[in-house]
Length: 460
Ligand SMILES: [Zn+2]
Ligand SMILES: [Zn+2]
Image (tube, rainbow, N blue to C red; front, side, top):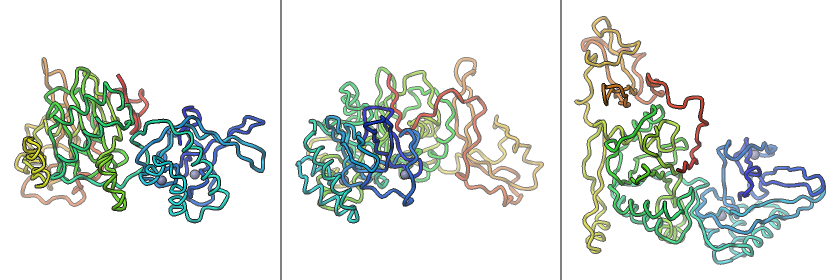
């Protein structure tokens, strides 16, 4: 549960659980406690409150503590007066309630007994006082529900990458979610936002990034220099792109969409949702929510640089590597049933583009003298008695009027030195063992801007 009062939103530094806030009725003193129905690990530690945004908060279902949160419900502000050894305190619950899918269906049906049953299943060892308090709280929520329900972006789902063959169906379901009646998180509910994003999904070109390219893009995104995007950098005006494995600072983004508009590019990163639900819940879940839930949302205004700290860094890096022609694209087979469904509805055959790194033949040959980039390790190859690996790194490529501008170009890992010499064992580094060195030009805004979190939702 979250409170509308920003000061009140605290989580525990030790275990990440959002903390309950109590106000002493006599002194007005504020105290924080772990929620009673959740087991805080390690056992017995005292809550160490920190602002919610400073902690990688471990949000759980407010009704049963499952981390797989599907929906947010809204109520009028709910508080409870609790008798404690130290006197009466007020517990402020706030207005927003996170629910896993099974609890959400019970809340929707005003099924208090069902909620109790589920809590009993997920927390069988709850003591009677905590169980009683949970029932009072659940009842209060059911009695105070406001209309409307919002797709959640909190909690954690197992990250399940999407197979290329199913991407058209995943896209259709996501577009339906965006045009449907359900509220969206991260500022996406605004009709001026969700309409264009839904339209762009229907027109989206679909890309699937293979495992090797995903690994390279994720690695390079960690050091993405400040980059001014141009229209030529984006592989299509509107797109939906899925990575072969999850990316991003929390390793929970499996896909991203982009929408071109008059105010720049709007990017939404998605987590996978639904995995691990029992069969009886999974089908209604897929019908209501599909496979993807919004996780991050960013507007990239024209002229504003994007760098490694942006929530769009992994997507922008993937674009740059495609634009740099490091990759090749082939059609990916689409699931037969999906193709048939498209034909039945008179739609053109769905296309998914599989993107992978080009064959090694296009990689710059070892010790290429034409390379303008000279690192400390880049003495003339002839003088060496061994060959060595150079890790993937960005370098500034001159372009524009008088070649005064620089755009980042990723140089792939390569072997340098005389062909007949042995590869020095100590320099055989895995491509992804460490972050590449920072680019030569200073990073935009270094040390001036707070690092945006994964949840940041820039607005313009
Ligand atoms: Zn804790
Ligand atoms: Zn639940």
